[in-house]
Structure formats: structure tokens, C-alpha cells
Image (cartoon, rainbow, N blue to C red; front, side, top):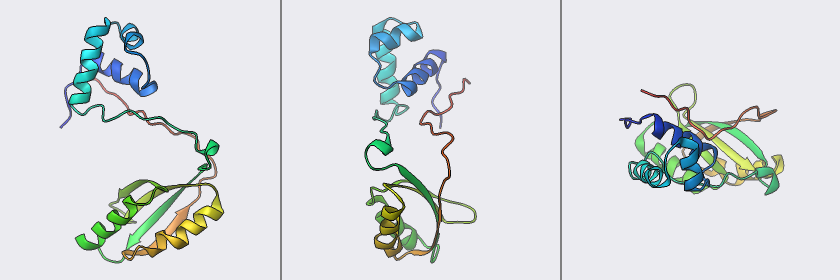
Length: 157
């Protein structure tokens, strides 16, 4: 159930999504509060689980992880044991940065980050195809990335 957020909360979240490292005094100035009430609101948002954590967003091309691919996955069966086994194994693969169990044509959609196509081929052969619950994998290779954001849309109620 969504938490009731007022305009100041939404403004704070908007600024933090843009710059999670902003100093509290700068955040307070930007949202029109004094530092103490601003910090109190941020702490309440953290305690309520609205703010889950803070991370550094890396440029994959600068650290040898510049290729992002998508794989559509079909399971051999739909039983809980098959799905749980897949989830357990996929969670252990650092190359898989997103995994979604799907309703629709495929059973799962994953995003994989590797250095290049050759490293993806090795990952595919050595790890992905070794998951016993997978029947079929179809890899999608993006030609161009048009938009990537980690900011969620914020709506006032």
C-alpha cells in the first residue's frame, strides 16, 4: 500500500533521485526547509522504506561491463520447484542485473551486463544454459540505448 506523501516529501525524493549524495544543507535549501526538519523528513522516508538505499551508478563502459543484453527465458515446467530453482541460481550470477518473472509469452526476462559479445557467449554457454529449469533462451541485442533512468515517476495524491 502506497505511503501518503506530501509535496515536500515528493520534492525531497525528486532531488535525492537526481543526486543521492547531496548534502543535507543543500537539499534543505533546494526544497525550502531548514536543515533539521529536512533531515527529519529524509530519516522518516528511510524508516518507512520509501528510500530503500543509496547507490553509486557506474558507467559500465569504463569498467569492462559496457554491453547490456536482454534474454527471454522459457521454463520446462511452471511448478514452484522449477521457478524457485531458477530464481536461486539466477540470484548468484553477477552478470544478471535484473530478473523479472513474467506473465505473457515468456516466463522470465533478464538483463545481462558483460564486456562484449564474446564474454556473453561464454556466460550463456557456461552458466545460463546450465540452469536445469530452462527450456529455451532467446537473446535480444539492443542496437542503441535511448534512455536509462533509475528515477521513478512521482505523483502527488
